[in-house]
Structure formats: structure tokens, C-alpha cells
Image 1: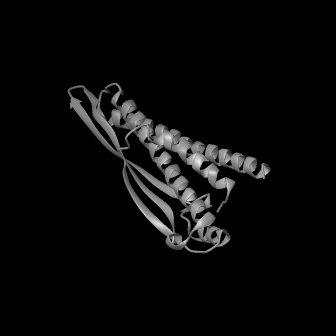
Image 2 (image 1 turned 30 degrees about the vertical axis):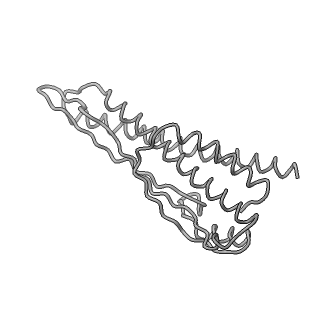
Image 3 (image 1 turned 90 degrees about the vertical axis):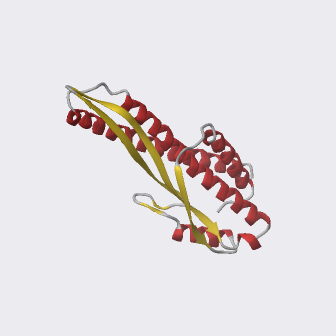
Length: 197
């Protein structure tokens, strides 16, 4: 949990992320779940976040997480001697897990303001992950719709599978890059705020 000037940094990051996430009207099916944390001090809340945050394999416990699934709808058109993609689209489904502080209603002052900024940043950060998924779902749909016809649907199916796997890898790297970039940007802003005293 962070305080003072760092809370202002969270506001700045949240505003910057909001600009990234509101450029398109998201079509994703989003469900949100909360895990509760308790405590009357920032240190106690930090411990609770580390204990109860969602677990990500390879990363451990995190503040918030989004589990993204892209559900395909692919219709093939079979004609004598050829098979083509009649329609390819993907529905993004996202399960977002965010923290909820039990004592928020009774809290006041610096700790309440810091929590509000922290929670808002976490939510907007997860929305940015959903927007990245939506962008990649759109790219994948266009790539599949642009595939040329093949002699048979089995051959076309193999091409669809290959393109989908390649695009899934690109999507995964984009999500990881976003997290890495945000982490570096956040750490830099925190260091600058602490250096200013």
C-alpha cells in the first residue's frame, strides 16, 4: 500500500490508462469477483493483499487479475473443390478479480484516499488487459476472414489452427509487455516521488 505523493502517481497512471481503455466500446463479457482484505494500517493491508490476492502461476500472489478467454465462432463454407471461411469472430470473456477492503466505509483520511486511488488503478489496469484482448480478437478475426480458400476444409482447418496459435502467442506477449511497461513506469514514478521527499 502506498501513501502521500504515491497516491497522486496512482491517479496519474489511472488517468493515462483510462485514455487507453476508453477509445473503443468494449464488447467483452466481463464478470467481476472480489476478495476481501482487512486491516486498519497500510502495513496490515499490504500483508492481506500478499496473502489473499489472486494466484498467478509463475508470478505468485498479485493485487488483481483478469482471466481472459476468447470464444471462437467460425463458420466454414464448403463448395465443390474448395472450402473457405464464411465468418470468423471471437467473443472475449473476462473474469476480473479485484481487492475489496472491509474497513473502507469506516476509514478516513490518508489511508482511505490511498486505498481509493489504489483500487481505481487496479480496476483500470485490468480493463486495459481486456482492451488488449479485444484488439487481438479483432486482429485474429480479420486474419481468419482473409484466409484464401483451400481445396478442402481439413486443410483450411489446419491453417486456421496455425494462425490462431501464432496469434495467441502474440497476444500473450502483448499482455506481458503491458505488465512489464506498467511496472517499470510505476517504479520510476515512485522513485521520483520519493527523491523529491
